[in-house]
Length: 389
Ligand code: TGC
Ligand code: FAD
Image 1 (cartoon, helix red, strand yellow):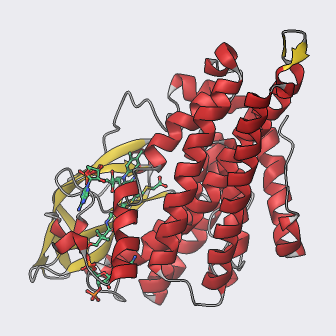
Image 2 (image 1 turned 180 degrees about the vertical axis):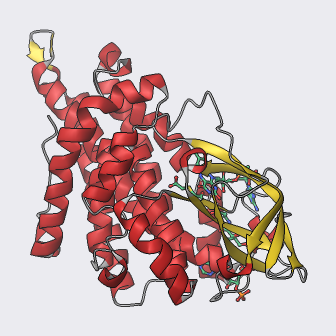
């Protein structure tokens, strides 16, 4: 069973309240996620018990105000929760980060009082599951080109278009969908399951994030009440602001996945005997393990600092991009390296490395690809925009 590692005593940087929350989630993951997640991944099934359970333990909206059912925690608190969930599985962290950062956050930040009261408490408990529709079949890294649009129809609008690769869409009760109005301006709309003309078929046969449902969102003349339009934002800034929050959570989550791989490799290497010695005694294996804990520790410090800046209102989107890019790549490298420490055993479902590795292949692509985040940093440090060159 997973043992936490805190090589540089970074726990001293985390408040008692946040440590309590993290430890409670850690215990929940051990009890509810670890025993079933491998089978869930092998069967390519989303566990509804986990999806609902996340609402019971306060993992939906921990940083959303208490008056709307959230936990009222700071961003470090949200981060350490994402870390523990992704130690269990990236798909489980996805459930919580989409609900929190991509559904509850835009409703809380850009929604009307009526929208907040109607949706947030039910999303916080997990009674309703939400999804976030930005990516389209022809517009992934470049969401500004989106085709999905709506036209005026009295007290409703008529929505047409399609979204692709949407986490939780096949299961979701509501979706925050980004679409262009008649002037070509991006707006956020809350689409509800059951609206005529709206379907959300699942994307089958993924080799990655097999515990998380991914689907399309198809809109064929869907009549959406105007009261479902988020009044507080116009333009691409709206969805991109939500991505900042989710990317931040992913940067913490990646540390959790890496810790799980490192912990499994460390314990195995001390027990596995070859040439009459534990393989942990061989210098080549020590190099792998020593580099892993070094990289994990650096990644922890990076995201802790970004979280601290976020709590002070000083973190920029580019700071968050740096952390997402660095930490996900770090976790992916550790998943591959730790798999090798286990030799053949590493390819089995008895150990978590292959599952984490395959999951992280999505994590390095979604919420902005590895390349996109590098170009965001490049823009920030040079002042020159590679996306428009
Ligand atoms: P650009 O002209 O740079 O910006 C348009 C407007 O947006 C503002 N802006 C931001 N605002 C807040 N946060 C950010 N991170 C922002 N980035 C830009 C910008 O200031 C401007 O505002 P205004 O008021 O002046 O109009 O936009 P661009 O079209 O050139 O694109 C820039 C680019 C490429 C960086 C951006 O589009 C991008 O980040 N692309 C990647 C797309 C992406 O990350 N998609 C993620 C989809 S959601 C997802 O993957 C969920 S996975 C969920 C899970 O399971 O965990
Ligand atoms: P493309 O944009 O087509 O990119 C292809 C390649 O070209 C990449 O390597 C990219 O880095 C590179 N590239 C693109 N532009 C440039 C450039 N200017 N310079 C250099 N290289 C470039 N989206 C949502 O809206 N909601 C969700 O809930 C959601 N969940 C997802 C869940 C999963 C499992 C996955 C895999 C994706 C999900 N996505 C979601 C979509 C995700 O955000 C996109 O896949 C991602 O933004 C990349 O878009 P794309 O796949 O169309 O790749």
